[in-house]
Image 1 (tube, rainbow, N blue to C red):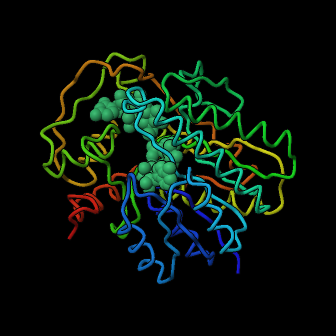
Image 2 (image 1 turned 90 degrees about the horizontal axis):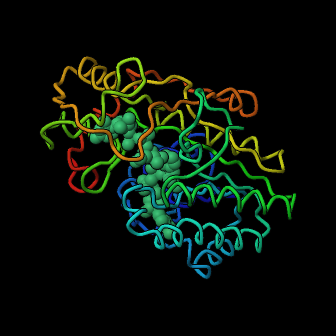
Image 3 (image 1 turned 60 degrees about the vertical axis):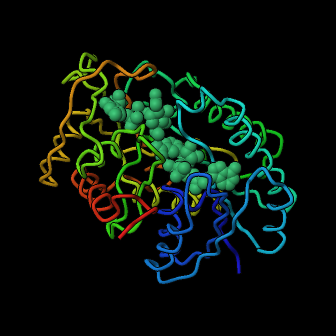
Length: 340
Ligand code: NAD
Ligand code: UD1
């Protein structure tokens, strides 16, 4: 029996991908240190899939612990989600971010090579495009980083590119996610941010459920149709399906490819607030606030490469995104901590 190893499998995107893989008949192992997640997510994934998931606790920087996993199980490919992702925190704790994200990835690759497992799907981000000069953004756009989180993703991309140059029998896919939102339609698993959410959708959901008074919209004077920032929001279930396609693609491929996972459509902050209110019939009070430092006006993908290479394209609508985000929030007002 062979397994797909998910590092960070208990997290937001990892848990949805675990569910998609189990439903597609894969055997799945999650290896997570639970620094930003809990085992509850994986228990629910197993229930939803009516299937077993091997749930291991460990840190990707712990070479001995990782080696033990590869020794015990026959792993055919790794999907590498494990990483820290809070932009603000990364500027306060750069060493922690570089250690966790960059050193962790190097350790993972070393262990993979030792056990001759050379298929890897890596969670990269549209953040590697920095402040892109033109939209939509394709994979050949110049890369840059404005904070240690983004820099860690960029460094990992370079490291993996160098690895493939030196050892061409690796097969690696860099999936550059745009803005993941939404939740499984069961409302059983979803995004459970720590403390005050940095990202728009969890903030809107927490305002709607009454945990926060109002949303601050960071700037209404951007050069966009309504003045608020434009992003490519992508449903996490579509994103999970993209990982399945990437794994299937890697079965017959060597080398390295960067692939955007986005819808190709940009929505503004006001579009999101209005859609959330009208689809879910719930009020989302907001105020206009100053721009957030480091934010860009507009960012959305050209998703053609994913269709061409993976046969993947996003299928969920904006309505699906706001409806599913709200269902998760309503059913789990305190995330996994105190859900009903
Ligand atoms: P998440 O925090 O929910 O999941 C990450 C998981 O990795 C968590 O379960 C955490 O406990 C685990 N983890 C962190 N460091 C670890 C370590 N050293 N060893 C073992 N486990 C560790 O985040 P997510 O939203 O699911 O993101 C998954 C990946 O996708 C991350 O690498 C993130 O940077 C990337 N990404 C996320 C977004 C987004 O908006 N959510 C956008 C682009 C890229
Ligand atoms: C942020 C990160 C980026 C990361 C991405 C996905 C920053 C500067 N960038 O990007 O590195 O890859 O999340 O995790 O943090 N907004 C509000 N009010 C809020 C929250 C957000 O108006 O309370 C606006 C933002 O200004 C932006 C849009 O909503 O226009 C989306 O914000 P967010 O969800 O944080 O994503 P990004 O800014 O794309």
